[in-house]
Image (cartoon, rainbow, N blue to C red; front, side, top):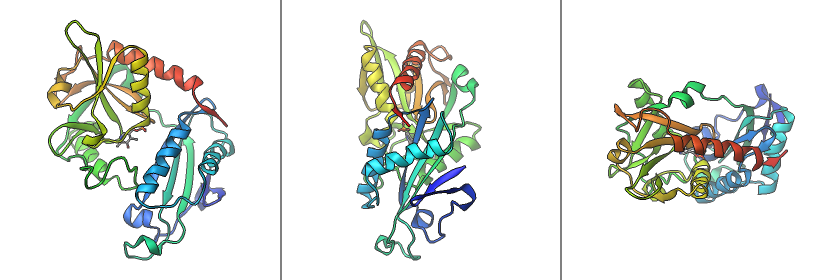
Length: 293
Ligand code: PMP
C-alpha cells in the first residue's frame, strides 16, 4: 500500500509522522472519510469543501489548493489500484513543541490513506441494528462545534465505549438538554406517518450539535425527491421509540436500519419499507453521481 504524505507517495511502513505533531499531541487537525464506488468518488467536492471549512474554523491553513487535494485523492486510488475504497484525508497542525501554541507549528502535515472498504456485516443491513442511549452527552456546539471534523474524537469514543460495555455496537448521544443528536459516527433519521398526511423524514437540526453529514444531506435530498415530508426537528427518545422506522447514515455505513432502541422495538422490528427504498435510491446514486479517477 502506498500512502500520500506531504507531497509524496511512500510505502505504508514509511508513512510515519513526528511524535511532536500536534495532530498526535493534541488532536489538533482535521479529517475527512471519503468513499469510492466502482471507480467513482462519491461527493468528493463536498468532502473537500467540508475539510477546508473545518480547517478555516481552527485557523489551519491547508498548504494546498482544493484542486491539488482532489488530485491527491484520485492519485491515492490509482496508485493503489482501488475501485471500491475508503479514503482518509488528514491535515494536522504539524510538528511543534510540547506547548499548545499553534504558531510554533510551521508546516501542516497532509496525508491520505486509501484502503479497501471494510464493509459492515451484511446481517446488520438485513436484520437492523440495536442501539442504546448513553450517558455521555454530545459536545455542546458552543464549546466544540461538531461541524469541525477534528482529530479529537474522544467525545464519540467515550460514547462508543459505553455502548460496547453494554453489549451494543452503536450509541445514541443526547444533547445537553436531552434531545437526540446523533450516533458516534453516523447521523440519525426517523420516519413517521402523520394522520391523513404522507410520511415524514425527520433528523435533528445541526444547531443541537450534530455533524452536517454528507450522507445526511444526500438522504434528505433523496427523501424530497421521493415526496417525503423532509424536516429538521428536535427529537426526543420518545419520538424515536414511536417512529415507524429509524436509520443511521454515514459515508462508511451508508444507510443502516435500526430495529430496537433502549429495549423498545421500532415499528415492526424489521428494516422498514421506506428505509429500503432510500437504500436503493442511494445505491443507484453512487453508480452515477461521482468523479472518475
Ligand atoms: N456524525 C459523525 C460524528 C461523524 O463522524 C460522521 C462521519 N463518520 C457522520 C455523522 C456522518 O457524516 P458523513 O455522512 O459525512 O460521513
